[in-house]
Length: 182
Image 1 (cartoon, rainbow, N blue to C red):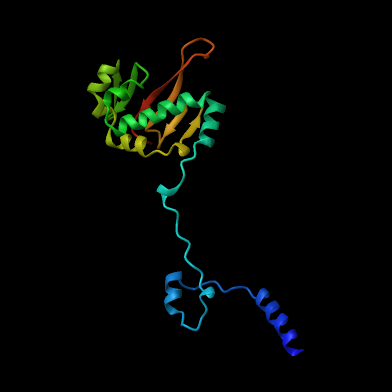
Image 2 (cartoon, rainbow, N blue to C red):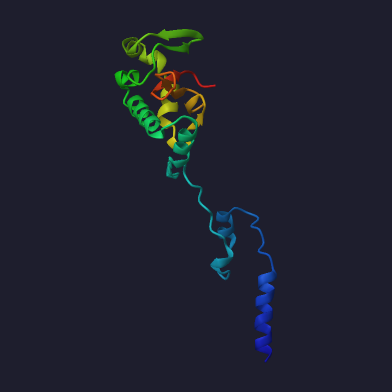
């Protein structure tokens, strides 16, 4: 009879006793644990999720684009084309995505670009390594969307719809800004 009473009492005490917080990092705790201590008493380290392992889920960004700017399919197409073209250093393909006339700032001075031919000629001055990094490293799911368009990085690139009629029913999605980040 004593064994039956003792067992529930031990279980009750074990359930009510808070687990002590480890005083050292898990790797150090494991090193100081003697062989008689059950493995269940040491908590395994929770590995940090690497940034590359984060899923690039477009659903929330697509919903934001739909709500604020319109048809996300048109925006997503241009955004992905921009990223691929910049990654390939295809100046002509990037130039084809830009809204002209185009003005940016280089070395503190305005740089006016009248057409795609000028853009291609000035590509290395316009798409600097910092801007190229902001565009190519941007996760689609982390794009910022507002009434000004879709922003890459810290504002290094912007994509927005350009109204082609008074009612803004005909929209052409284009790159509207390439500039040093803020």
